[in-house]
Structure formats: C-alpha cells, structure tokens
Length: 224
Length: 179
Image (cartoon, rainbow over all chains, first blue to last red; front, side, top):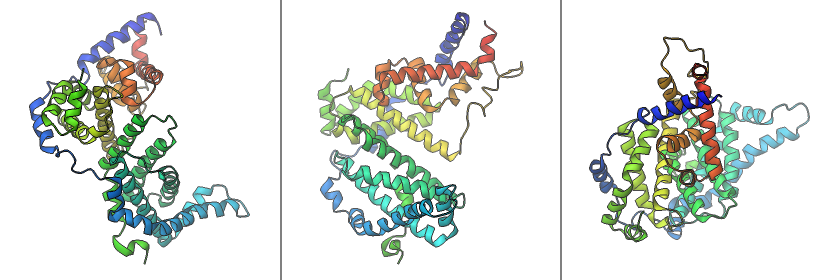
C-alpha cells in the first residue's frame, strides 16, 4: 500500500473517531440511581465453599456421580466401540452420533444425565468462585463434559433447536473453564478474572435455568 | 488515579466510596460501551451491569492491576457476552464477505468510503474490533488494552494490525483511487 494510501486511510480513521458510534453525554445520575438500587449490602449473596457444599445441588452431585459416569460411558463408549469395531468406520463421531440419534430413549437418557452432571459442575464452580477458589476437580471434569457436550451436539442434529442452542452455550462455558484449568501461568489475578468472565457468561446466557428446565427435578432425573 | 483506600472502603460496603469510584470512571466506561454497541439503551445497561458486577466482585480485587483497568476488563466482558448472546439470537453468521464489503467493485450508487468503513468495522471479528475501537477510536494504550483483555501487549498490537488490514482490504478498491 502506498504512502498516499496510508495517508488517506489515516484520514478515514480520523473521520471514524467522530463518526463511528459517537458517544452522547454520559447519563451519570440516571445510571447511578439504577446501579444503587441494585447494590446489595456487602456480604449478602456470597456463599462460602462449605455452605455451597451443603446446598441441595451439591449434595445431588454426589448422588449423581454414578448416574453421570454411566452417561459418560454410554456416550464415549459408543465412539470407542465404533473405533475398534471391524469393518469400515469412516467417521467415528458421526457413527456414534447417528447411533444415539437413532434411539431417542438412549439419546434422552444420555442428554438428561449429561445435563444433570453439568449442572452439578457449574453449581460447584460458581460456589467456589464466590469463595475465591477454583475447584481442584474442575480441569478433569470440565474436559470430560466438554467432550460429551460435543458428542451430543453431533448426535442431536437439528431436531431440537432449543437443545442445540443450550448445548452450544454450554460448550462455550466449558471451553472457558477448560481454558482456565489449562492456564499454567499461575497468575491468580488472571485466573480470578477469567473465572469471572466465565461466570458472567454463565449468568447472562441463563445456562443453569435452561438446564433445569430440561432436566426433570427429583428422582425422575435418574431415569427411573 | 484511583486511591486504593477508596477501593478498600467500597470493598467494606461504603457506597459513598463506590460512588466516588463510579464518578471517576463512568465516562470512559460508558463511552467504550457505546462505541462497542452503538445504542444508548444498551450502553447504559452494560455500564450499569459492569458497575454492579464490580461491586459484587470487589472482594476479589487485590490491587495487582489498576482499578480502572480491572473495571474495564469487566465492562468489556459484559459487553462481549451481551453481544454474543444477541448475536446468537439473531443467528448472525454475518461475515465481511456476506456483507459485501470485500466483494469490491463499488459503483457510484454504493455508499461512500466513510459508510463502507463503518460497515466494515461493524463486520470485524470481535477480537479485532475491540482492540481497534479501544486503540484507534478511544485512545487506550496497548498495555491497558492488553491488561483489559487478558492478553500480551504483542497480541494487542497484532490484533490492531490485523483489524486495520481487514479494513483496508474492505476498502481496497476505494483506496486505489488515491494512489
């Protein structure tokens, strides 16, 4: 690009400063009154790790471990089975996905268990983050769930757009958690900041309420 | 420059101290939010969300970074999450090419360079757009952008370079007129 062109481009950039989304005056007082109304007195709404572990959801997690392990085996096992099976297996994920998708009951059971397990992880992560910590099991757990989420995304196809969107949002949150867990920098401030980002995404995409809308409450979520 | 004792007072629940932090930073935060979304109602909402989140997370602020940088990182993440959410809802998938910016061969009836440039900025991938808006339009230095986005200074510079490259590409035909 010529110097003349650079000059012209610089002129255009200068014009953008005035012309691209030029901010109006800050509505300071109006915004402050909204913010002030939303400020909670310090200390409320913060759940300690110990308290969080006593919550219903976290207790559920312990009971759910076996059920979710079964779901993991189901989803991943089909993939591995396809990999090791004799004959032509051109696309493992596709075949595993197709197998699950062909049987709505299998797919539903795997999905419900997977979502219940994910709900438990996210609840735990959120509670620990509020206490300023990262759960030690987060790395392994979120990585496993991310793999399962992707398999389910492949499996469910375009049949259920609501579920597809939920899995897509879930994938985004899990990718962030895996990224945090993989961050070897040891920078606690950065981990805290990344964790806040992930939690903010979690809140704003309403992932947890949407999971709870899909996963039946009580014993039925175990498929009984 | 924010006095750390003000932050500590706010952290202890002093809303007057928090108001002081708000007054000191709200203009820049609101400006940036507005640049990113181009809509006053949304910019207000994101600015408010950012400050509420800061209040909720103040206990996590240790003072390793400047308070304003920390606040900006929260504000940017609030906006980006909001934009992602609304983008997904619209099933966006709008690329620069889809928008016809790179197709080139502008005719006289097409929008002028300035309009095409604005549209090209809108179409930039968010990682480039954010750096471009912060540096070229709002004048943040690379070290602040890098800290805000949690990336290296070199990454911030590389993203800005790439953003400008994409914009030049989008205006390729127009730029040739001035050679």
